[in-house]
Image 1 (cartoon, helix red, strand yellow):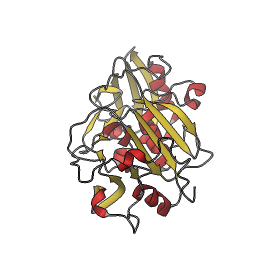
Image 2 (cartoon, one colour):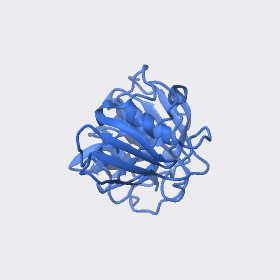
Image 3 (cartoon, one colour):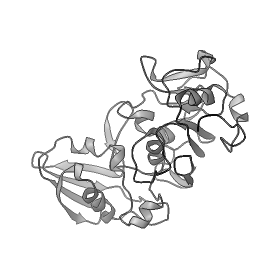
Length: 286
């Protein structure tokens, strides 16, 4: 998309953005409601749910899928689908206990086979073999001991997908947002799962809408004119009023810029863009 068509860019229109007050504290308490609109780069018409390159697909996958572990905004490692993990041989064999009540968007419960499929699907994990300890436990043996293995599993490319290829292709995940509309290289709309184990902890927006805009200056214009709330740009449009925007994660290290209508936690993840690709689940309307 090389220019802005205000009639079709966003189904939600720009009216809501005109109501956003500037200078709202980023520390307002999280609450449910609203639609997050983002203009992002890196998409292609050949995109599918197995693609992990580019901010557009990373943000979409971060909303729809989960990982075994997660790196919080402050850099600490915590469980996501994994409830706990341990190694008793110096990092060569890892045992993961899986959270209860993890449900895919097609109402099928997560099975340990889905975790086994993850380990078998990614050669970069360097897994020698996988065993199922019990119905909620998976044991992975590595070719070489790796003390950072749980950190590695937090990477966006290691999202937990269903074991079945047809369900993978349909974008069925366990995340806080289900795919309502997905046009490869163009647009993604996600709607909040009505009931999720992370309720009251994450997933504050009712909907999220991502649009692909390849040109950075056009993304900046979309942000300035209120068509979007956030864009993966490092410099504002020259006609923008800086007081209306937040440079994130910090003015010294800008990965994305957001309007003050969007609030964030105290710390924003910097391992990957867009709050470690969890923008949709961690941020909320100010």
